[in-house]
Image 1: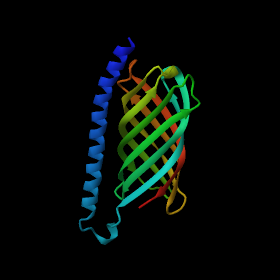
Image 2: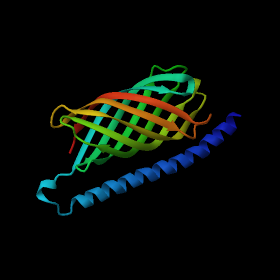
Image 3: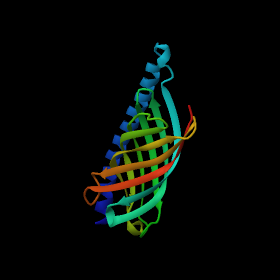
Image 4: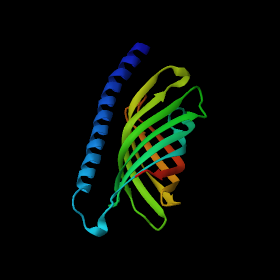
Amino acid sequence: MMVLLDMGCRRRQGWVFRVGAALVLIAAILCAAAERARAQTVYEGDQGGLKISAGSTGSGSYVQYGQQKLLGLAAVADFDTKRRIGVEAEGRWLEYHQTSNVHVETYSVGARYHFDAGRFQPYAKGLVGLGGFNFPYNYAHGRYLVLTGGGGLDFHWTNRIDVRAADLEFQDWPQFTFGNMTSVAVSAGFRVRVF
């Protein structure tokens, strides 16, 4: 049984890895295209359209498998344009408050829509990526496709520092070993403008 489960996980991991690699390649192409488009002539009042920020958040998550409530950290990189469309890349490691050594990590990238309302910046995002799940008592570790939808609110504290006041994500793991699994994550932290 364990051999069959391991063979099924390996087959799935190969497919998920190929999809993840393709998504990373598409994101890189989109970033390169955005940079090339930025080099075109623009009106004087419409210049300076790319903002790159990186940050970190603390996260709390409810995972449907075993009704786990996990805590962890996340790293976030945002590539925003002046036209309200951007790309977000995120890594999340839920390692604390484990029961039976169950822990989760996700790596996702996708589109982000944002707008400024005074010193606040509401946003919505849709991400696709890979999730790693460690089963109880280290019985197995699987990698799965993860689809994420969410949004949140940033506060412009200074010209370079934003406080991520709230970030809410709904994750769907459609190819999880024991059927479709969902999770909900809430995060807060900060991000710093790099460029």
